[in-house]
Image (cartoon, rainbow, N blue to C red; front, side):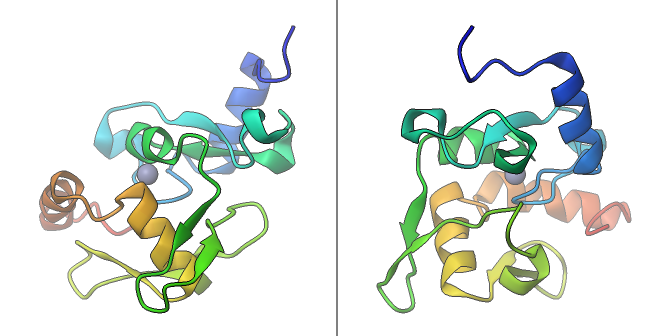
Length: 140
Ligand SMILES: [Zn+2]
């Protein structure tokens, strides 16, 4: 048994704790129609453990783009910074929605680098957010 095996109970707990939303881009499973994935915040490859403090719920887009990355470059300062850690940091301190809820705004170097690495303002998700916002489903 490897350290990265996630039991059904752990998976359920992480999904419930996150409110069934991606802990990075906030996309809800119910409106995307796709179950979230369990992300190791510190990747297993880098010694991250399968424990509650190192797990979060991530949509398939964020999880796939994050992969084994732990840092990114802030496009405002050029600084290399750690990516957002949903267990240790507050989402509202690092991210905000623009006026119509389509684009995420990075409020900090960490927020900006995370948006860039995870492509949290990719045109496909921005288009989807427009539709969700028109239906009154986003941002929640
Ligand atoms: Zn996401």
